[in-house]
Length: 222
Image 1 (cartoon, rainbow, N blue to C red):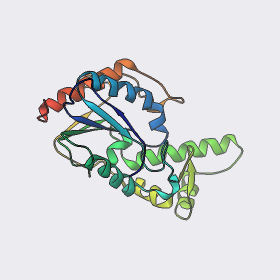
Image 2: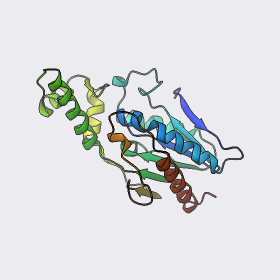
Image 3: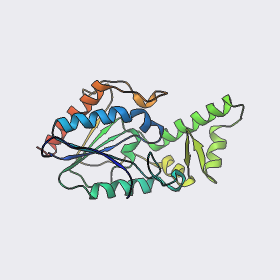
Image 4: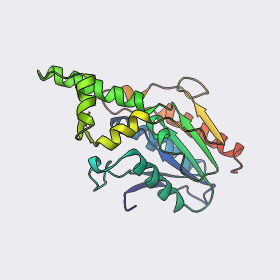
C-alpha cells in the first residue's frame, strides 16, 4: 500500500501479530496515544502490534477526498495479507466498519459504531462550527451538498463516495469475534473519542492489552 505503519515488536519471538484498527477521522487522533500504550503492553506480553496509516490519514500522501470506505477496507486487507504468522484484528469504534475483509484468526472490537451515527456526529459538529462563524447551515443542507461535492467535516474533506458509504455502513458480523463495551467486560476508562483534545489513559491501555491477550488464547494463539 505504501503507507506508514507503526509497529512495536516484543523482545523475543512473537506469539502473533495484533493488527490495530483505530477509530476513523478525528476520533483516531484522540485515541492514538492510548492505542500506542496498548501496543507496548501487548509487546510486553509477547505480541507484535501494528497500526497502519490508512490512505488519506496521518502520514499518507493520498488526498483524503480521493478515498472512500471500500478503499479503506481493501487497504487494510492488503496490510494484513503481508503479515506472516497468526493474526488477530483489534478494532475500535468506526474502525470496526472496515475490518471484515481481513483474513485473521479472530477479531476483537471495542465500542463498535455504525457509519450513519459517525456521519451525523461529523455533520452536527460542522453545523455548530458554522453557527459560531455566523454561517447558516443544517443537517439537511449539508447532506444535500455532500451528494455533489466534497464536504469539510471536522477538518476532514470527505468525498461524496465516502459520505454515501458512511451513511449506509454497518458493522459486519464475523467469527470468531469478541465485542467489548467500554465500562464493561473489564475495560474501564473514559470514551477518549469524545474529548475535545487527544487524551491518554494508561489503565485503559493495559486493560485493552490484557483482554486481547486473553481472547487470543481462546482463538488458538498461545
